[in-house]
Length: 583
Image 1 (cartoon, rainbow, N blue to C red):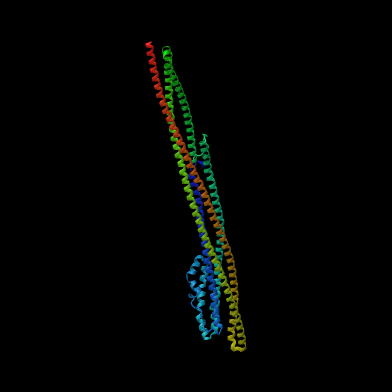
Image 2: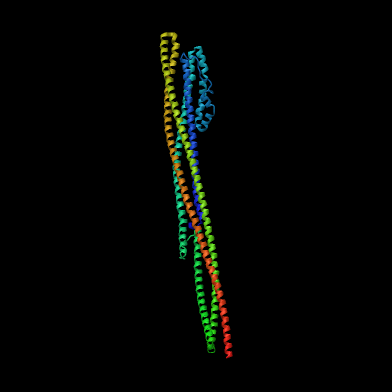
């Protein structure tokens, strides 16, 4: 089936169905993208929070170890105020709570690393009572051994494990950042492509529907104007939709009207000819009667001529009666044909009204399409709000990364303090070794302790250097993450702008649908005007039918007059016969 043979309602329904399908796909895709972005953003938040927690744990344990070292080395510190239960410190609460389970569920590779931290972490806190007891007894050898084996060794193991865990979390954070950037770029490209495709399809459908509907209707209106002007040619619209049906009905109506007009003209000409013959016969009869009345003295001589005239009048009356009878039959046929034409006009008017009704339905569909397009614009507005919410989350993530950088700088400052303490401890150990050397044999044990303290200070300085390098790496990673977050914010802003453009495109589509609705309303108006013209033509045909009836009535009157004339001629013939008999 050809496109131009499909009904208007089906054409408009198909076009608007395609538009609704495209908008539905676009809306579903936008919701999917928002879900993906939200999921990646949540993963970024959780990874950043986990990394910050691990950094705080590492920093807290360095501060914890520094407090223990100050208690051992600084005589002014008389009370050791640190947490001795590994389950109650900040890291312990996270380690044995939901935070660790959530991290292991999201990042299974970190599980063995965290498992390896449990024993040294508990051992680190458990050594504090022994150090306090040895300090109260003044047992420097025991304090040194406990600090070296219980704190320095376990702290190194904890720091190494936390560094590995932070590295894994940082890698997960990098993957989440990459996934977010890739999702944003992909969604932007797809949104641009889908918006352009939907706009192009809507414009093409609007242009195609306008040309396929308004063009034939415009030609049909011109044809109706030509028919009203007297040009009764056949229409030239070859299609089978409502416009084609209206064109065919108009063609049939014009053909029937042309045929009936020709028949009416022929019957009228015949009636006029017979009427003229009757008038001529009546005039002849009147002249003959007047001559008969005026020439009574010539009646006997003119009887033969009167008889001839009467015979001629009888013959003419018979012929006139036959002609009038034929004219009467022709007038009746004409009236019947004109009645059929009136019925055809009524059917055509019904077709025109049906076309007008279909055009009105199409206008309602256009209004519905406009409403759906406005709903699509509202959906795009909601998408824009969601993307802005994601943008706000990205800004908060950036602020968290800045906070992480500040904490890393704080750790760096603490490491500087620990490094200074280690330098001072090293100097104190050297001084103690010098004093022990001066003391001779009695200071040998103290020299051993001073040497161990010096070694511990050197290890602390080395660990501080490692921690400083790790903190610098964390700061660099935080800076890199901040740059990536900035890029993500810019990409989200671009997505927001593109979504705004999509809203503008939807508003333009609403305008296009309004234009299509205006065209459909114009079609309905033209159909109504055509229905009015059809009714006027039907009224004109009814008037012709009335005139034909009047003509038939006149023919009946003429027949009665001819019958009267025949009776008069018979009477005249009888009088002539009587007069000849008297002769």
